Length: 307
Length: 103
Ligand code: SF4
Image (cartoon, rainbow over all chains, first blue to last red):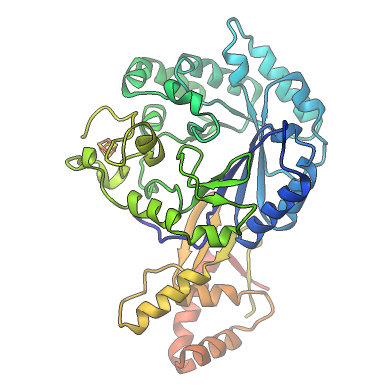
């Protein structure tokens, strides 16, 4: 792996719930821990956009030099509750609920983006690429080009918060079925900043872009996740609870045996990858998915076979 | 010259990591590739080794190059003359990358 082990994560995803939410003071305590840890980037997802403590939380993180991304689902309420001058680095408009509806219209996405722009935000589009949605990717890229957003993000599968999605995580065969559609996506995405968590989907969408900057799965090293209960995980796909940020500071949890065991596991070549010539640029893919849907010896479930 | 970090560069001093590297150096291990400062520039991550990190942390726009050399030399018990060339070259590299300017 190219990078050393970090003192604290660089990026954190944090899911908030609006039902039985953490109180503002609990959010504040966790945020303080993140600021003290020197976290660079925090992405707030789930119901964060309508959490009563959202604005205070964003301002606290921003005041501590943490760059904040907010994920907002595409719905009419999304833009009407957002205060126009929040110090956000990035706003991601998640269009998952809309593309799951039959007969969805590009105009729904275009209008939502324009409404956010009136508030002074320039959202990018996000779609979780679960089974049943890959066929929608050409439309996603088409609408992204139509409305002129700067980027599109296809994030990782959030099994920590949504274990029910395990049966909809993509497999290698899903990617094979999608392969003929990938060039259409590429044609409409030439000017877009594309962020694709999954390496195998990335290869289909960006076959010309090398993986040389990829230094392996960053779960439990450069990356961590916080659940709506305030528990720390190696990443949003890896269902291993490291501990509660309401009970211990991030710095202590990061030095715990549970966290260092994750790094050791990632540093070990999985049995299923042992004869693969691509290991030096792949490192077994998404280790959280591999071990949560299989074992620590499994390949990334989107990988067809060793190369 | 008073080197000043570009405020668009996000960075962090990895203190625990630095401590581990210093211990490794005590044991005689080569630590030249080990990072003690993490930078993110336009979304790409970079790391600076021990000497690079020491220089970077002093690029506050107020400390003269000579003082940086002096301070680091004193900390690591190295003669300033031996260090000066390395520090200069490193700062030229950082300037060319646009990560520091002369305040
Ligand atoms: S077997 Fe698949 S997951 Fe494992 S290193 Fe090779 S390409 Fe990656």
